[in-house]
Image (tube, rainbow, N blue to C red; front, side, top):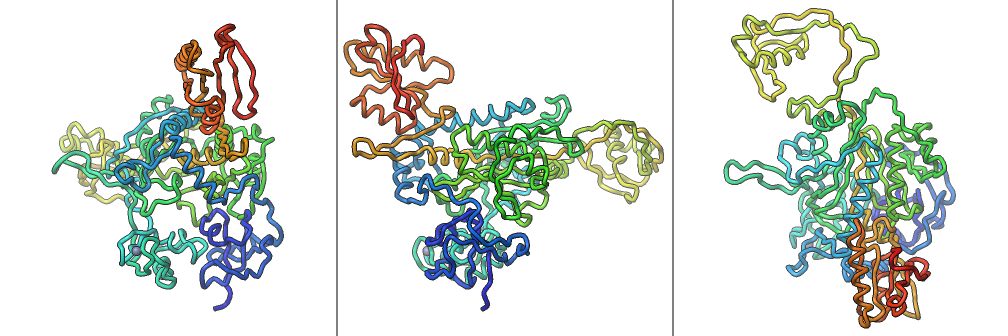
Amino acid sequence: MGPSCWIFHQWKQSFERTVVDAEVTACTVFLHDGDHGLSHDNWPIPPDLILCVENQRSALLNSVKFIGHSPQPQPQAMDMSDEKRLERLSGMLKRRGFLLPAFEIHGGAKGLYDFGPVGGRMRSRLNQYWLNHWLKLGNVVEISCPTVTPYEVLEASGHVGEFSDFMTQCLACEEASRADTLLEAHHPNPDGLKRDELEALLNQSNPPCPACGKADWSEVSAQNLMFHTTIGAGSSGRPGFLRPETAQGMFTSFNSLYRHFRERLPFGAMQVGKGYRNEIAPRQGMIRLREFNMAELEYFIDPHAQSDEDLSAWDDSPLTLLPDTLVETSTTLSEAFESGTIRHATVASFIGRTMDFLMEVGIDPERIRFRQHEQNEMAHYAKDCWDAEIHGSYGWVECVGIAHRGCYDLDKHEKATGKMLRARREFDEPRTIEIDAWTINGATAGPAFKAQAGHVKVAIERLPKDTTFPVNVTLDSGETVLVEQEHVKPNRQTVKETGEWYIPHVIEPAFGIDRILWHIIDHAYHELEKNDEPYTLMKLSSSIAPVDMAIFPLFEKDGMEILARELHQRMCSAPGVVSMYDGSGSIGRRYARADEIGVPTCITIDHQSLEDGTVTVRKRDTGEQHRVAMDSL
Ligand SMILES: [Zn+2]
């Protein structure tokens, strides 16, 4: 077999894990003979050199041809590949009540996590911060839709047919695995393979079962990932699912939103809430969950309207883009939009707003990049799609998707229900329109359709000229009636139209809250040493810190504890403020406990406080202490 060449992107977990002796860079490509796994001992290339060669599937040979050093090396501030660090971090998160495996006393359940006494508050602050961030647009509302969703809704959206992964089962121990995951060491991009290709590669490479080590696999089959349920009991129960995303509720609510906004676009609806995905084999902690927290905004626009997005606000803050040309660049949103790299101004502005949000909640800006979907990766209806990827302990992970979805979603629900999901645009000048089609024949249709005749007329006038009768017609109510030739007559006339109804386009930023929360923690977690002991400092942004202040009495005696409790109560009653009282252990231990969960401010009540009403305020990140009057807090 002659040498074949592949392009490897660093965001592929498989690449980072299997190529241990290579420096992973933004667009690193290695010559590879393609007929077995990637774990070479004798790479023919110096590890710091990039070779860009052909991707077998798409003709990228011309688009990527530089040979040289990485344009943007990996950030070096922390050694994220340190598995021990990940272990220590995970242990701390469990011990301190950030994140815990759910139902652990019953043996736990894979892919389900609890947010504990610290994590629960952090998650809700993150959700609220997200909502507030988008409310600033001024034309966005928050809604809340059920997680239990009827079958028909998700059939219309395409999820019943397409929301699936390819699985295979170990014939020895029955453990189910994702076929693409098993083949990560045997292919650079197995999640892009079709069923037959996966099956062929599985038979050829025969990887061992992660559970029992044998290598005997069943056929590869598509497994729908939605959780099935029944809505109602007995024979009246109807099939449904736990929603795989929050978006569908926003689409089905379109008409109510349209009324709310006085029938003027653009506007948006958003919600935060649970989504469900019955992962075949969850792994990587918070990255792949079976029940997850998401936050989505559906922003409805008129595709004909001139966008008035002002991208100049981001002119001084270039960001890292990885467009579908696969050449990573640092550029401003204005430049990226004007050059056509980002294809829609609203998509560009949402990328900017997403970057702002991620930085404000504490993600390291050096570890954020926006990756454009390649044509073969993007849904057929999508016009442009960018993922915000964050770098952390698991490599680059997709945490936000910003997609221009065209009119796909509303169109699908309109077709499935017969209900109009449209907005009206007025013409600048009335237009003369020639009509040559059908209308109702009142003499025969009146008696035939009675009270419904008006609705039948509307439906008939939408039929094309070449319709043959009899034909079944769906009314706006969703009901279907049979229309005979005798019920209709030709309709030829010239009318003046002042406007038209159209299906709005949708731009959707979708945020994986768990993944973002994980990376906030990952980036904030600092391992230090104090007095020769390991010391943990969690540098959380005050916008989402789970506890705003910790209040310590120096000793729980002489009235210090009473004063401290009073202050604690007063702080807790301030809106949105969470205070924590801690009176046990040395003051140094208490500072350490507060630093470990990222409390920005500690307040100590001591003997002097009893005399003059002042307290010591200590800042987490600097360790600075100063005395202030208790009343000024
Ligand atoms: Zn097995």
